[in-house]
Image (cartoon, rainbow, N blue to C red; front, side, top):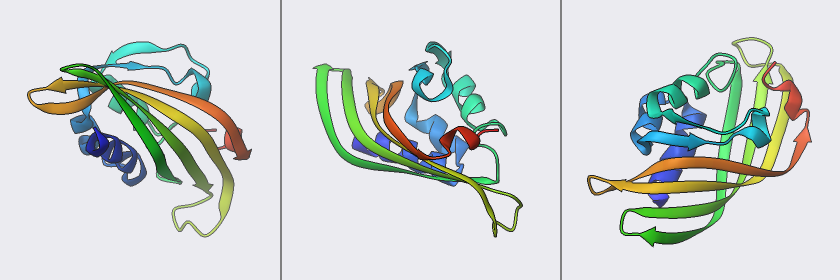
Length: 145
């Protein structure tokens, strides 16, 4: 589970969308309402990757991030199901141009991330994603404009 969580965050930051898809169960319950204001929904792994990698979200090449995962605690609910609650600081910067010399906006989220995991063919995969935002620094609302 820790490996899936690490790869999840690092794939966001490196924009490695194939790696992200590998961390996911075939269907994912996604509740980004605390970040994007949209209600949670179940979607295919591919649809989730398409949403995250969209140019209006993390796929924007002018947006750099670091999803830093602090302490984690896990609870195994069944042989093939578990949850993980992770402290997270998600740093975001949007640059004005591809040379990345001028920061146009920065915003950092402080939150916990609840992941639901399912064991599929012997590997733990992320089947649920729900952040709880405690607070944001700077102009987080200006990152995805």
